[in-house]
Length: 414
Image (cartoon, rainbow, N blue to C red):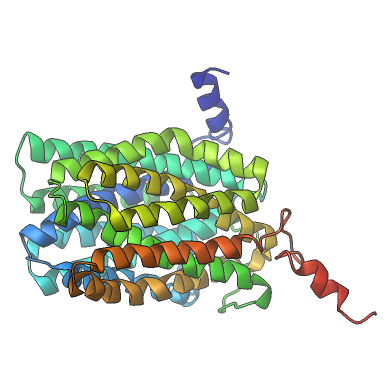
């Protein structure tokens, strides 16, 4: 099969219901997020070091501040008493854009903490709604492919954003505040587009309007918790390593991020198809084995180009995390999806809120602090590997872990 035919197979059926469909809206939301968030993320280390004089400690605190709204994502259940999910998603997108637009105008420590918090409120509520809506508007069987398409759309939008950022710095020597303002304004404009151009889609299943915590979702909660901690080490310290230790300039950081997303445009739908064919268990095992090796290598890397290679590999392995969402979709009661999306984000961010500032203290403690931070990441990936072995080959309600047969066997008769 040629590359073009593979591409067509990955995207076939997206427009079968026209462009004003739930599937297209999911793709627009997926693409809108990185138009604001990726320029913010690509430049934040340079902005923080050059304009706000951050050290590793302040960078760790900033990461904790950024994750506070994720920790509070369970409150989405109460906000959905006011707004429908689709409306709330669009509102959150607009708030995220506003936070990014204001970033360059407040170049001091507390100003950066404030704009980061505002941006993050919109980002995390939108990500929660995006996860919930994708599960509700997509069948269990097709969810990995749909999420792969969403990841590819996000990667394409990220690549576009990085291209504009690269041009702004390389050829126009634009100040940070202009780049942040444009990125935020474009995102707010897309929020207005989604509000005006898409109809309000009805919910297929009634959604519980209370916080749902179920024992049978325990493995899913554990996987999300560990994922949150590992992700913060990658997001908060992997790119910071290249700026603080190896002197990467904004153009180099943006070029590296762009390369990641070029690969993701092609790879993400195939990851989805791979999960559909293999199942969630093998995909998660592959991800965590790879991450253990990558984090160990981060701990001892001494050259900038090798750190960049590790960053690319790191990003590719994280694409397999789609399998966690697919696993939950197969074991979930449809009425629990919205509530559990918020709860899982909160669980994911328990480690995300507490770990970055503590790891920041470790980073600045002595010369071996950097290695210790990434070895913690390797240990967390190893724990996740152990948890992935509990995922059954065919997850379903009543068959949430590999221990289900043992549990059923010990239930009393009748």
